Length: 132
Ligand SMILES: [Fe+2]
Ligand SMILES: [Fe+2]
Image (cartoon, rainbow, N blue to C red):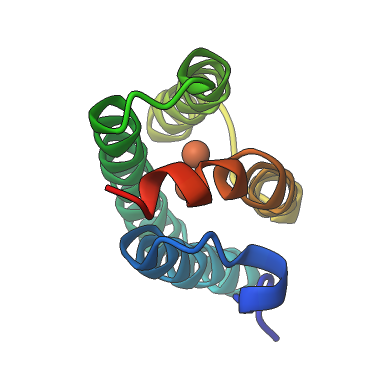
């Protein structure tokens, strides 16, 4: 069972590039969740690293487009991104140091973050970014 499923009703932003990135992100998170369920530390680590790398890539892409469009709510959006990146990097370092484990609590936290951020924060850039 997938942890998160992309639908345009819930997650569509009107910007196809970012919708595609969100779909890819959901796939990576579902993959991490499946690795956690299987309980194999090596595959959890690879899935975690892949997900976090893509999160950073996706955030940069959104930020670049928001800057290009002189999007007025950029600062608040950046703050949310930075906070999650910090959390992810801490988690990644602690996991690889062997001082923490990735559990369904972790994947649920990430799912809830996306469920909040995409509809409430990302979606607001739709009209501005689809015009550039
Ligand atoms: Fe996003
Ligand atoms: Fe965002």
